[in-house]
Each structure stands twice: as C-alpha cells, then as structure tokens.
Amino acid sequence: MKILPYILYLFLFTFFATIISDMVSIFGTMVDLLIIIVVMVGFYKSETEAVWFGVVSGIVAGATHLSLMPWEIFILTLIILVVNQIGGRINLESVVSKIFILGCCTIVHGVVITLAISPNEFFFMLVRYILPGTAYTLVIGSIIFFVKDGYITWTKIKALF
Amino acid sequence: MTWLTTVFHKNRRIVSFGLAAVLFLLILLSPGNVRPFLGNAAMMVFYYPFAELKDSITRMQNVAEDNRRLKNLLAEAALQISALAEVRRENQRLKEFLGFEAPENFQVIPVRIVYLGHDRYPVSAVINKGAADSIDVNQPVINQYGLIGKIREVMADHATVQLLTDPSNAISARIAESRQIGIVRYVPGEGMILDNLPADAFINKGDQVISSGLGGIYPSGLTIGIVDSVLTVKGSIKKSVWLKPYVDFLKIEELYVLRSALE
Image 1: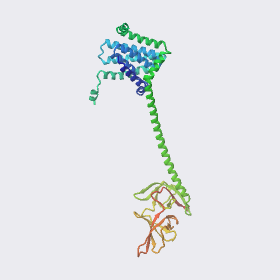
Image 2 (image 1 turned 120 degrees about the horizontal axis):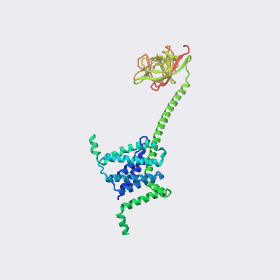
Image 3 (image 1 turned 180 degrees about the vertical axis):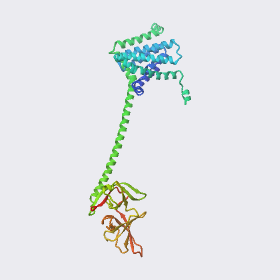
Image 4 (image 1 turned 60 degrees about the vertical axis):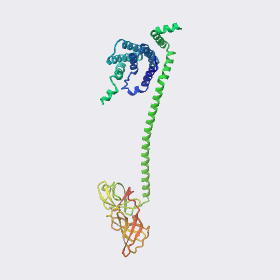
C-alpha cells in the first residue's frame, strides 16, 4: 500500500479548504472537495485502502472541530466503504451513475455533519447550504469524472477552438 | 511470531477493519486525550503550512493595499504642494504690487488673464472682468512692473487687452532723465523701439522710458522699459533707441486696469 498518493490527496484537501475554498465560494456555497476525493478513492482503490483513507480523512477533517472528529470519521468511512462496495459489485460504466452516487454522498455528509453541529437549524442549513453546496460539488465532481474517464481531453478542448 | 504473521495475512481484511474500529472507539471515547493529540498532529502537518501561506498572502495583499493608498496620498500631497507653491508665487507677486501706487485720479481694478493670444509673442490677452465691473475701452492696463497695454474690446464679463507688443499699438513716451518725447512701438522679431527722437537728444543706455501722458489714454509716468541701445543713422534728423521692457509679456498673470476716478 503506497501511502504517498493518499497524503497528497489530504494535502490537496487542506490546501483547498484553507486557501481556495473562500475564493471560489458563491454566496457562501462551497465545494465539498473532501467528498469528491473520498468517493473517487472509494471507486478506484481497494477496500482496505479505502477504509483507512476514510478514517484518516475523518481525522484531518475533524481537526478543525474536535467534537466533530468522530462524526467525520464515522460518516466518511461509511461513505467510502459503501462507494467501494457499490463500485466493486456494480459495473459503473456510466459517468452519470458515479455523479448520482457523488450527489447522494454529498447530501448524506452534509446532513450528518449539520445534525451534529446544529440540529435546531437543520432545515435552514439544508436549504441554504447543503443543497446548493451539493449542486456546486456535483458540477466540479462531474468535470473531474468526465476528465478521469476520458470524456474531456485536451485534444477535444483544442478541437473546439 | 510466524503464527501471528500468518493469522494477520490470512485475516488481513478483518484485522484492518478491527484496527480502524479500535481507533474510532478510542477517538470517540477519549475526547480529552486522543482527539486533541490527533487533531493537533493533523493541524500541524496538513493545515499549518497552508494557513501560513494564506497569512502571507493576506499580509502581501494588505501591504499592496497600503502601498496603493499611500501612493494616492502621495499624489494628493504633491498636488497640494504644487498648489501651495503656486499660491506662494501669487502671494509674492501681490506683495510686490503692494508697493505700487496708482497714478493720481485713477482707481485700480485687479483682473486676471484667462487667455493669452500669441503665436511667438503675445499681442493680446483676455481678462476675467468686463463691462459689469466698470471696465471700458481704452482704459490703461498695468502690472506691478509697468505698462501692459490698453483695453480694446469689452464684453459683459470679459475684455480684451491690446498689449504693447501688438505692432499696431503705438504710445507716446519719454525718456525720464532727458524728458525727450518719442513713440514706443513693437517691431516683430526685433523688439521694442522708441523712435521719433530728435537726432541731438542726449540718451544713455539704462535711461528709463515712461509714458508721456500725451494722447489722452495713458497717464504720465507709467514705466515701460529702459534704454538698451541707441541707434543713430548718420545724416538722419531722427534718432531711435531699442528698449528693454520691464514687463515679460510671456509671464504676465495678474493685471490691473486703471479706471479714471472721474468716470
């Protein structure tokens, strides 16, 4: 098990969360890059690697809010495990299926963390942040999936112009 | 030991899941010890470098903002300084004019030039006061150094001054020392000349030339210039002198119209 790529994924997440996230937020709606990374690791890596990446990414995500750390570990490990099982059992040829799964995971992550932080404002948070954030994450995630599966390539982009 | 390794390899999945579960339980059940330790470690390794980077970027942005603000302030200050310098120069000119006494029976109307018409040398100027301020045609115009010209045209709020440098403007003048009378006019490309002087007139370089008071427009005694050189043509009954005007017509700004107190 090579751990360097996973460390780089986590650095990519913390770099995004620390510096980029505020810059690319739209009226407070932010991209959940960690879920995109977690779902991709769940799809493309082995079960053991996926579980450990889920645990460690939960620790990193919860480092800024220690009371949320167990919740982050639990939900990210659960998500990565479920995605890994789905990816292994179902032949996911369609990118749309992957995007759909990404959407479900983003909503579940947002709902669980919101319920853990402020259950009283859940519906407001759902409408104001979780659903718009899911849409934003899906847009970015779709681009990444399309690039990863070869639907968007540099040659095709050049051909447009 | 071999037995343990074999068990581990055979049940790698279960052992891995078990270890993950133990770590999770440790984190869940010991919020005072394990959680802060792992949180601090994650912060130090994954967040701190980027937080420092972001802090540096923010500081650089603040410095750039300060720099931009200070540059604006500097530009404003430079503008104020140049405006103050201009006011100081104006103040100096006005102070010089304080020593000037208007000719008897004349009032002084201060005016400012709004347009100086010239190609190589100014021949006319537009001033910021007109008929509404009692400015009238043929009133003499001076500044603190001497005679400038006369009012040629008057509008309600503006008037045109015909300067001494206009070749069509000739005035009667005299040498202050010898009291000889001649005509001062401007010769384009050559300069100001006082001619029609008698051939035997006694004139020295540096003699002062003033208005004679003849002609009914200019009062007597207004300074025009000094004699620069004497031009004597053999056999001629007239003598001419080149003048060096007191006024630099390219630099005139504040002028004063002389209005007769009798008007």
